[in-house]
Length: 141
Picture 1 (cartoon, rainbow, N blue to C red):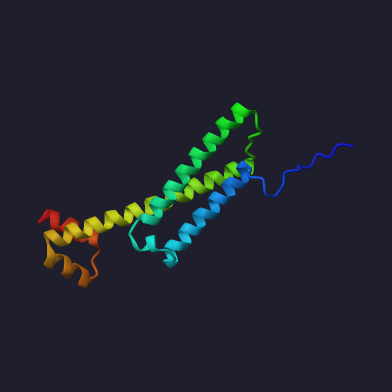
Picture 2: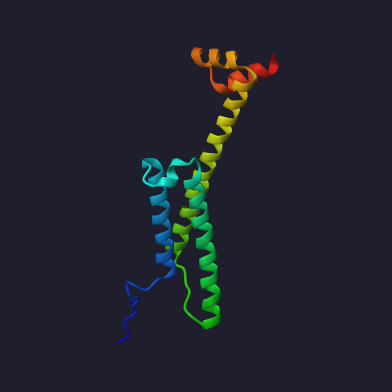
């Protein structure tokens, strides 16, 4: 009788396990940014850039793995689950990068507003007017 269950050993690295590991790295980086676990977390934006680099490196490794599988006729197969996890990893990372870029844009707007109209900007903050309204009003006048 043939056993149809997979006999993949627990220590053998497969594309599925590699993608799950990439998700774990992504979560670790996000948590390290939130709780300032590592030294590089004290520099603004470094954690996000390390996450981008880890996803990019993971794609290069997967591509090299695929090419080696073609050359040496190894089995290289993704499951639907691992592809969905890979999509989630990339989406989370892109969303995180977008949020950080928007923070930088808001800081640039605040810096520009303060440099152009320091008194007006501070008065607007004390009155509870948002930064965007202060900048818009300053551009008209």
